Image 1: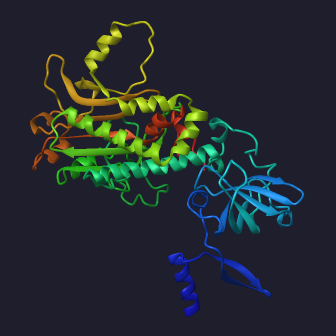
Image 2: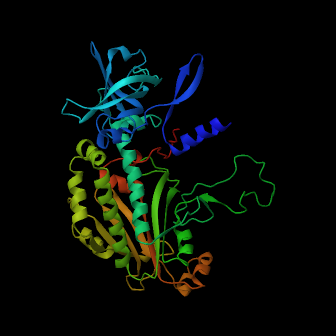
Image 3: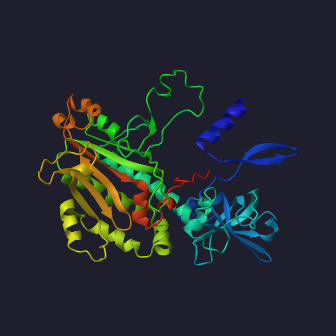
Length: 458
C-alpha cells in the first residue's frame, strides 16, 4: 500500500515519468529519462542530455544502416529529427503512428536543425495505416479539405498552429484584463433573456417529457430558457458593484446561414466599465485590447503566425503591422453614409481599422444610450470595422437614465433604480479577431469544432 502511494505521489509531482518494463512475465514500473516536450528539446536543452519524447511521426526515411524520423508532439511547429539504427525499424513504424522514444540529444550535422535525437529505444504506441489516413505525407492540404475531418485536422501543421495561436490569444486577452484591473465574471450559458433582441435563439428544454410535471408550466426552468447570445446583461448587473468586469466564453446564435462569416457557436470577449461617459474612453479600451493582445501574439507565436502569413494569407502581416502602428480612425455613421452616397461607383477599401460611431437610435438595441440629438436622433454606439472581416467589435454607452428606459423595457429597470451609474461596454468576436490577425477567410477554420446550420460534426 505504501509503495502504491509513493508511486502515485511521484506521478503527481512529475519528478520523473515512469514507463512499463517487463521482468519475467510481470509488468512493473521503472523510472526512465524525464519526458521532454519537443519544443524544449529544440530550444532549451543542452546536447548530451538523455531525454524521452512521445509524439506522432510526421515522416519516415529508411536507409541501409539508419532510420530517420520527424516526430511532433504539438508543442511546436517544428518537429524533432530522430536518428536510429535500422535495427530499431519495425513494421508499424509509419507516417502518422504514435511513438515513445528515448535517446540522447546531440548536435545535428544538418543546417536545418540545431539538434537531433540519437535514439536508443523506439516503441510504436499506436499504429497508423498511411494508406487510409486522410492526410498524405508530402501533400499540403488546404483548409477546406482538412475541414472535413474535425477529429483529425489537429494533426496537420496549419491547424496545430491555429490551436497554439488560439491558446496564446486566449491567455493574452485574460492577461490584458487582469493587468488593467478587470474582474472576470463567469456569465451563465443558459439564460431567460434575449440580449440582442434578434430572436435567433436556441431554446433549452429536456429531451424527454418526464420533466413536464406541471401541465400548466411545462418549462424545466419555469420560464422559457435559451443558450446565451451575449453575457452583456449579466455583466451590467456586476458593473453595479465593480468598476470594470469582463467575460470570455461561448455564445450561440441560431442563424440559418452556412456562409464563411457565420457560426452557430462561437466565443465572445465582452467587457463592461462603470463611470464611463464617452465613446472616446470606450474606444480607447477596445483599441488597446486589440493592440496589446496582437503584439503579444506576434511575439510569442511568431513561427505559427508566420505560417499563416506565408502560406494562407500573403500580405496579411503588412496589414496587421499597419493597424498596430496607426491610431484607429473614427467616423460617425452619418458621415459614412454621406461619403457612400457621394461615391456610388466601386472603390477599394483602405487596409485600416476604423471606428464608426453614433448610429441611428432605431437601429440599436434598447440598452444603447440615447444621444438626444434630434432631429438626427442617434445612439451612443460604436462598431470597430477591420479589413477582411467587417465588424470586429460592437459597443455602446448604456442607457442609465431610468425615465428614458421606461419607454423601452420594463424588466431592465431595477438595474437603474439602486445606485446606477453611467457605464458602457463592448463585445469582440474571438474567432473574428483570429481571422483579422491571421487572414483566414472562413471563420470555420478558426475554431476547434465548427458548429453551423446543417453541420455539427463530432
